[in-house]
Length: 387
Image (cartoon, rainbow, N blue to C red; front, top):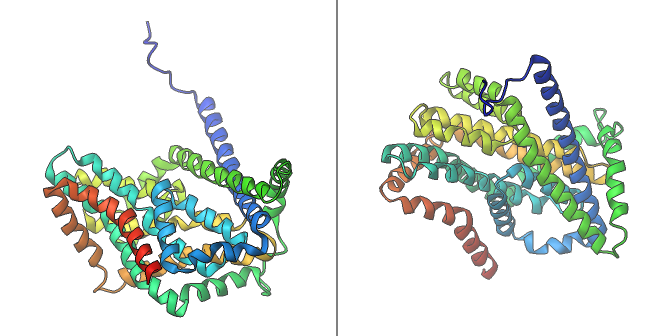
């Protein structure tokens, strides 16, 4: 008799059917993500209209914007969701200069997932935990260093804003390359977006707009969450092949592998967390993991660029601009920090020293995660408000 607990393997036809249905679900979730962004931006405009800038006056302090990005992303553990919502808010009227620190903060906040993953090695040997924690914090320290460099530069000279605006104008401005007349995505999402708007019409303003924002955020979170799960099932095998083929062939190959793997699974948290068990087991060292995680930083910007395609009309340009800010912040951070020999080893040195201290006292690891991602940001906000 066959064991009833053993599930029979799928036939080739059934397997192909399952794969086909999974890919249909992927496209449906991408569509849901775009609808969610459209609903957030429309709800924001319905609720606040021309008063959007006054609403976010509290975030005109760049430190507040930075902390909003850090804490919100640390709480939801998804920079893809956070940056997509920021794109939607910009489409609804949030000024780009206010949103830029939020994007930088989301970059920092997303790396808390690695730290949480490394805590799984707390019960193991001291060396395993040391290796895992070092691998989890190298991206934290890189992102903190990137923010330390670009945050004051952006406040003083606005290089990311200018570069992103010029780049966005190539596609949505007066250029011959403008794609503003080919609004295929807008035409696709408009019926569902308008249906949701009509369904909330039973509430008086501005409550119908608030409900639209909440529905849109819910759609974005659901789309990003299930999209990541589906793509990991469909692509993780191929992603692992790319990973093992590229790693060990040099830092450039490692960065490119991080970019492609993250695009495949649509989650930098999933990509970088994949490295933590390998680091703890001693399969890969920091010299290999470091460039791979930097590639993941760049690869995750695809989601915000995709989200920007859902925005049409006069707010399409700032929406694409803030998505480009996310791309250029990560790209220029890698080029600057990894490209300058004096800066390149700093995250690795810091991660090793921090991991050594944490391996001697496990509470240091917990204090680091709570302190960096929650306590210190709130203290900085308090100081900045007082001053």
